[in-house]
Image 1 (cartoon, rainbow, N blue to C red):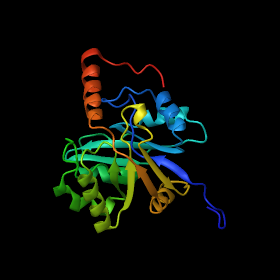
Image 2 (cartoon, rainbow, N blue to C red):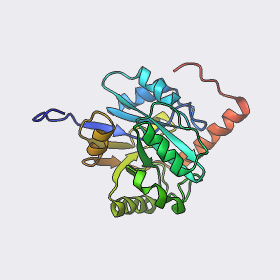
Image 3 (cartoon, rainbow, N blue to C red):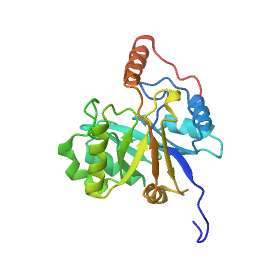
Length: 232
């Protein structure tokens, strides 16, 4: 950014899904429409184990809505999110290998919903030490984290290790967008994004625990009846 230029504030949500994830049936066009309706200007689309959904959203988004290509990758010991990716990172790799592959693409490594005792795929504590040098961001607020004390543990962990902090609605339904707003300076590229997060203000509220039931229902629905991705 040029010296003397005051950056335009960004209102972001950095965790969400579309029907490209197995537990979501939200079309990309509905996600874009909702994001604009609630005043978001930047979103990170973090599909489970693919970047196709993020690419579809980016193709539909107008210029006033920045879309970060991201992926929530299921590793052998929990989930890791990669921001600013160009291609899908395969699931089933070790946390360390996943982090390395994110960095190979010039991306940022984020730890989603750490310490959430309700979720199945939370990154396990025993693997933190080897990946700490690769971590850029810790998600300290996820609207789908049931217990606030788990979010507080994430914040304490981020402070202890001096990590930049992020937040997201983890929306699997379009109406969940608006539960999180990260207000921060504008940015251009991964490193400016990371720097801008260091000056962010998070405005957020938790979603009802019932949203997890909706996701499970979507998963079963797709398994039993199938689900065809028709168009963006």
